[in-house]
Length: 107
Image (tube, rainbow, N blue to C red; front, side, top):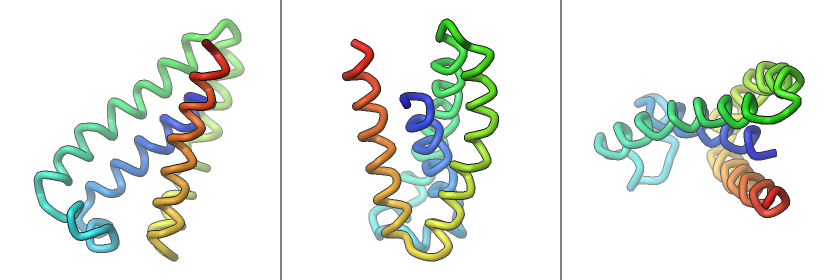
């Protein structure tokens, strides 16, 4: 659960940092400084999701799940930003809750 949420949040941050998607986001995220911050935050989140997936005891299955989940999460981000930013924002909130739920259940 944790790596899925981190992966989605990373891909959402990367997509939100692109100029063509920034116009769909809230006005305060459109500034160039926010785009740079989102880009800088997106790649470490994607990398952290991979590290979390590889850090488990059954890492081969988690790696397979991560590779399969990457295009699914990217597709959800793409469709969310294409058809309605509200959907992408709600999915990002759900991804954050997924990470928190995974952290709470693991420790």
